[in-house]
Image 1 (cartoon, rainbow, N blue to C red):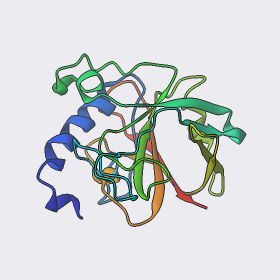
Image 2 (tube, rainbow, N blue to C red):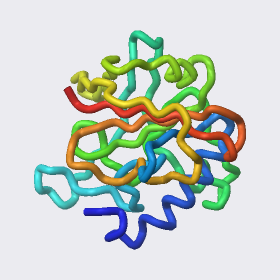
Image 3 (tube, one colour):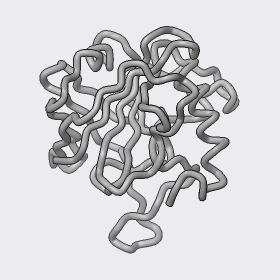
Length: 195
């Protein structure tokens, strides 16, 4: 389903733009016509492919690991109210974790999983050194390693470009960090496709 077909997506995209752009050192980069937000931007998570309407995938217990870059962080569910000033929160994304944008795909379930973190030491600062072919692992709470390969790097995506959160047919990670301390700075985006 395209972003244009989902009425709840546009307000969330605007909120995410503010959250990710206003949080210290949290920005994303996207190619023209794409977004810095995850592909599936809706307030409600989607049901798991198992068909159970009550079972929804979650990032609880997951970690993102990019060994070559020294990245090893727990993944927590993002909070628009906390991370985005216009969402009623302070616009202060916590440190020490990477955050999954609510409503985007959960890694391993197909689609676009949008994950963001500060450009700080011990977080996503070294993401700036990513190269095509880098291995990105998502470790599940059950201990399974899901492998993704970096296929695209976009070092200067305008903060107004929210196309990066749009749903995709493939199983991908869209990783975002900032290039500066305010929303005026572009975002740095890395796309990794499931291997």
